[in-house]
Image 1 (cartoon, rainbow, N blue to C red):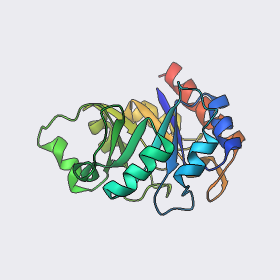
Image 2 (image 1 turned 90 degrees about the vertical axis):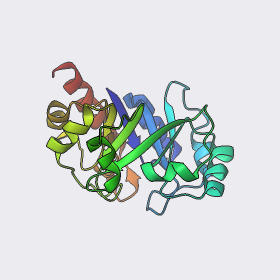
Image 3 (image 1 turned 90 degrees about the horizontal axis):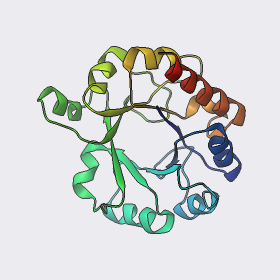
Image 4 (image 1 turned 180 degrees about the vertical axis):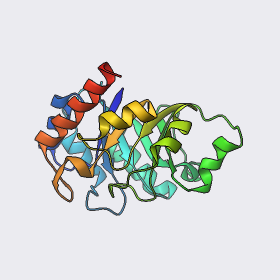
Length: 202
């Protein structure tokens, strides 16, 4: 089970997520209370272990904006809406995690029987808003590949979400915050522990 903590903005909280056992950390380069500059992201992740993926989270970026992040931050993964990738020049060394949004026409690619390889996210209309998607629908998409479930997850419901959806991974942001954009190390630890426990007790 891949566990991703998204929207980190300080080195203290990066370290808290690493210590909790997160597999991937997301850094937001889009309009958000969690927005961070590529230079700051590079600075606060300088001591991150290589085993933890650094994810650049973007929304409809231009190729220039993406390359600014790529060269200043050097992420392991680019996470952006599925339709964004056609406009972006992404090196083969960078993983691509397309976001499929509930109700978005892009999700019709699955209905048409087209294969989506690799890892992808499934979430609501707006990232970081705590919107819970329909888990029954998400479960259908989870059978199509390595789906990371996002949207409205917390330490209280992640076990039920994992049991219902059977995702490849889970992603959290707002539910591990003490205030909008302010991560809470205790909540991060509880979320990761709850996800790991659910993984061991399906």
